[in-house]
Length: 435
Image (cartoon, rainbow, N blue to C red; front, side, top):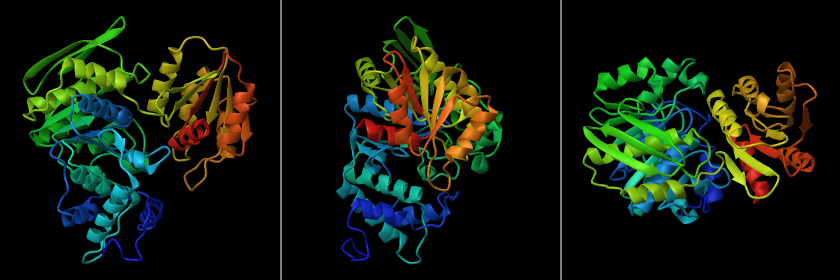
C-alpha cells in the first residue's frame, strides 16, 4: 500500500477520522497487536527515552522535562494525550507541534505496516503512539519524553524500554480497567519500570505492589522523601538527592511557571529523572541555569491555567478525586475572591459525586452542562448528583458549555472568579471560546 493510494486519506482530518474507525472499541488493553505493527515498522525508537506514568501530574512532569532539556540545547520529542484544541498538540518536536504533513506521512507509515500481510486492528491511541514514535525518529530527536495514556502494563507507550521511568502519583481512576484499589492500580503502572534501570516514584505513599514489582525485576527504585527531597523556602526551593549512587543538589530554584503547590512535586520528579538519566551514562548534562530557565519557561495549558483579564478565569482538567483535592488546595492559595462560579461538565464514568464533594466548599454557584458521546454525563445526571450533595438551588443547567460560560461571565463581577473544570472536553470548549 502506498501513500498515493486513492483509498488512503490525504489530510490530517481525513486520517483522524480513518484511524478512529479501525477498531470497534475506544480502549483495548494489550500490547500484542500494537507490538506486531511496531516490529513491522522496524521498531522506531529515539536514542533516549523517558516514560512517565501516573494518575495525575504526568503531563506536567513531561512538560517540565521538555522545557528544561530544550533550554539545554537537546532536540526533544514529546508525546502526550489527549489534546485540547488540535491533534498536533500530541506530538511536539523541539517544542513545536508536528505539522500536518509529518503526521500524515506517519499515519501512512503505520498503515503500510498494519496492512502488510494479515491486517492488524489498532485503536486510535495505538495508531497515535506508533505515529509519534515514527515522527521522533524521522525528526532526529535526541530524546523522547513519552506520557503513558492509561495504566502502564498494557499501554502502547510501554512498547518502549525507557532509560528512565517515572510514576508521578497513584490514586483511583479508570477503575474498570486498572482495578479498584491503589495496590491494584500500582502494579499496573509499575510495569513501566525496567530491570536494571532507574525507576522514579514521586508519590510519598508508595503502594507495596509497586515496591514488590520493582524489586522482583531489579529496577533501581528511587522514591521522593527517601532517595531525593525537595525543600520549600521563601520565594524559592531546592532539590537534593542521591540517584544511582550520584549525589546532586540544586539550590535557589524558582517555582515552576505552572500554578499550584503540587507542581513542586512534579518538578522534583523531573529533576530526579534528569539526574537518573545522567547517572546512568546518558551524557546529557543540564546546568543550574538551564534548570531554572526551563522551570520558568514551561507552559502546559489546562492545568490551573489563568486567562488574562477580569474576572479571573481558571481552567483545570481535574476529573478525578486526586486531581480535585489538588485543585481544592490550589484554589485556597489564590487570595480572596467574593464569589467562585464553576463551569462544570464531566464524563459519566468518572467519580462525579466525590469530585463535587471535594470542591463544593470552594464554589458558590455551579453552571452545569452535559457532554456528548457515550461517555458524557448529561446535564440531568449532573443535576441529580448536585441535588444529592446538598447543592439544590445552587446550580443552573445549560444546553452547552458555551451557554454555561456566557451565563457565568454575565453573573461574575470584577472581584469574582470563574472556574472551568471537570474534563479535558470542558477545558477544550472553554479554550476555544477564549481563543
